Image (cartoon, rainbow, N blue to C red; front, side, top):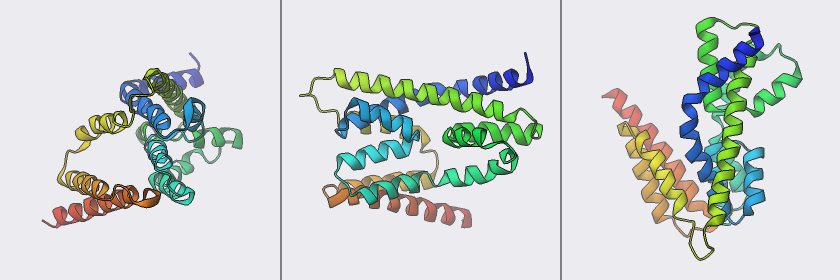
Length: 230
């Protein structure tokens, strides 16, 4: 096996244990697109163009709530702001690559691809084939995401129109969220955002949901700082 192929396969193997957790998230994105009234084609196009789970689902929810376009774009940018830090962290290692590599690598940047790649780079020191490892992890995740989104759209389309799909998205989100609430700041953030999103229901342009998310983040940060101070 050549060095390139070995690195590519290593990337696929490294991301494989994470894929079962990606599938329900991708299916949720497909159902959320349908619930927002986008139709199957547009919902799938969102997965191709955006390829970012949380912001994709939030975008679909805001579109379904007839939020202002500027608010939808701003929300997606805020959720994906961490990608700027990921890019800055990886830039020093991949900057010498030609543009034909850096453009697709930027498109395939995800939490998983970044975490796996930076761990390997820091552990092994950057080698000449590390971008093949990144491609193996990122491309495998991308294919899985699109398949999961397509499965969610197919499953959602099979549901009779008389059945409301709205309850499915928060239900799956809750199943993904609850295991992640493993600390006091996370609990405070979740409770704050949940309560305010209920109280803000019906606000114009989806403002209640956005403000609830921002308030939840602020509450979590404040609680974490207070916890550190003792």
